[in-house]
Amino acid sequence: MSASYAQSGSGFFGAAARLITVWALLGGIVLLLVVAVNMISIIGSSIFGSPFPGDFELTEMGVAVAVFSFLPYCQLVGANVSADIFTSAASRRTVAFFTMLGSLVALGFAVLLLWRMYFGMLDQKEYDYTTTILQIPHWLAFVPILVSLALLALAAFVTLTRDLTVLSKGQ
Image (cartoon, rainbow, N blue to C red; front, side, top):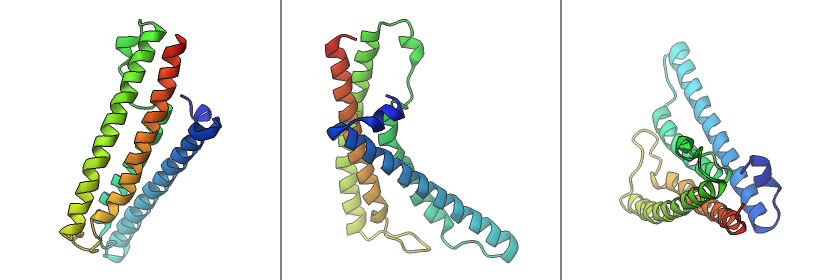
């Protein structure tokens, strides 16, 4: 699915595609902020002899949040890794079947990860784990990651529905 097709839809699927796209853009902003923190730390260290305190902690949390925020968009637009060498000679229906199977697996993994990460967040909160320097609670990073996983499940549902439609029409 191309990005323009994902954003041009109407109704539930169009709204889901727009929400997922905005979430990925927010993840890009988080990644830019991580780069800015690292730049400030490098400049501060080389010019003033003092790096940005907690830059590694912010980098770890920021990159994790950003990576998870890109997963739903990659699922929605079909940008996940695929082994086209195995399907290059296959019929369109066979490729559509494998694409549908991939969407089904993505949905299963998204739900499984959402479930387990939720309980991981609760454990982090219960044990009051924090970062060493800035004392940021670990569980705070789980919140946007859980949103990303919920959106990944939504994206997988959207692509699964689309793939089943393609299969049922025999295209």
